[in-house]
Image 1 (cartoon, rainbow, N blue to C red):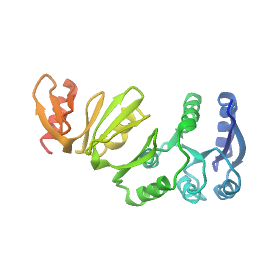
Image 2: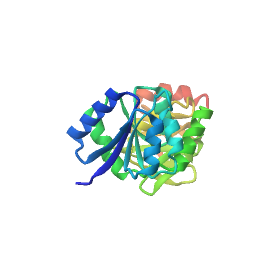
Image 3: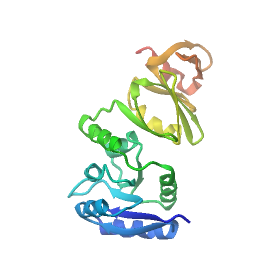
Length: 249
């Protein structure tokens, strides 16, 4: 079994102990080589030692997890954030194709996150730069997609529609490009459908950019024709909500 060298940075000793025990019990392939309650000392260690995976708390008094990432932008490792629920922080993480666990950490979610880390790319400088821009601007214009070819940054306005297929999502752009992402459609809905009046989920399998609608055909729920000729059914439960949005476009 692959040995994954990991470090935990969290200002709470109790949280470190809990996560360490969970990893020992559920992820024996993960070898915790060091833990730090001081992010500054953690940064020093990671710059001097090769590590595969970092479990990183976000809310810390000395430095936030985002500050830590900024200083580690050139260090090759993978990152899983650990955080209590923080809407802004989680949205920033999702926009940048990073992974996270909510405290208290559940064993099943920990196992899944560690499995995902095997196929995810190392932390990239572009991700960190985009994360910092997100923190400063609050209203992001781009989103990172983790694809089999690597990390891709695209403008939200360039997304025409998204199609969910199980635990995967096809993201279709206005220029015809398609990207396959290993996240389900609901994960995208939580991010981009907050862009009120721009994105809408008319059906369980689709999210659309209202700016790229070509035609609406009346019916039981109705049918949307996108500019790339894609035909998308509107569920009966979403029909009135869609028409209310459509009339404002």
